[in-house]
Length: 196
Image (tube, rainbow, N blue to C red; front, side, top):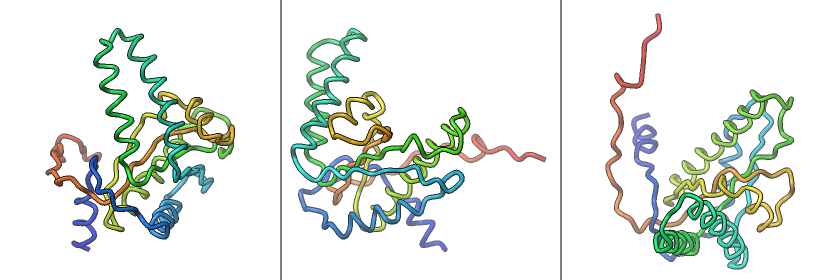
């Protein structure tokens, strides 16, 4: 039991990776484990797109950075800052050995009420956590990226995904080339209340 707790507590967000490729069976095991996540009403609304070729990354990078530029210009950011962020984002996208886009199938709900939509999004987030833990179990580092939320339609179109697939997150995975940092946590007494 202590080993399992240690495993859970040692997962970190990794942003730098070795260039070593990740074998396809490893990716398949990670995705399979991700599908074991709990979901509301067992509807399993998660969908995955593995970007395995450079043209897919290029199309995605263009879609995401176009939206990024638009938003930063609207916020009044200096041009140099915009270009630096775009360059850094494209570099991270291209340097990650594995890129997985996590989507939500918008039809995988019992009813189209706000609560059902929220449950569906929460279910997809559960799959994201399982994906990161499965990558950790395989000795990989991973990073959860939310860029697709800012350009959902552009992301879907760039990758030619089904219309019902709503991009939620993206994961960069690979063998870590980064020092693991200590995680700073809020003390339990600040975040837990005992209800009587």
